[in-house]
Length: 97
Image (tube, rainbow, N blue to C red; front, side, top):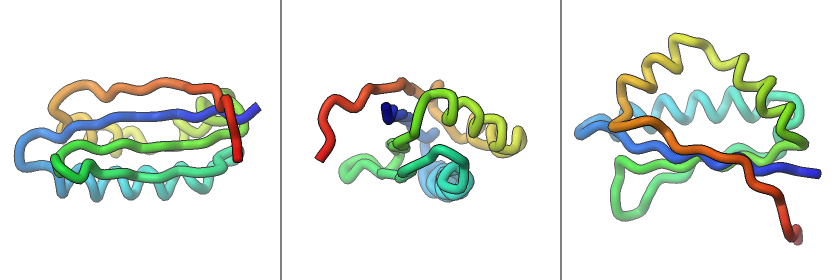
């Protein structure tokens, strides 16, 4: 069964553009991971510093394996741009078109 992963990020003041560029590179990396069906970066239409990364995976194990392919220095750069810790979770797909 497919599993969705939703990640929410908020940038520090004045760092929205930097965080956006960094998240674009992360999403590109994630898209090429085995088991990834969809990876999209969304930016809030009213607050430029708020982002969501939506991912659809074959299963949770595929996502967990993909997290190990993201370079550690990229994660450290992201943490320096964030206003607080990211929020994330796994969601079951209850209905599919």
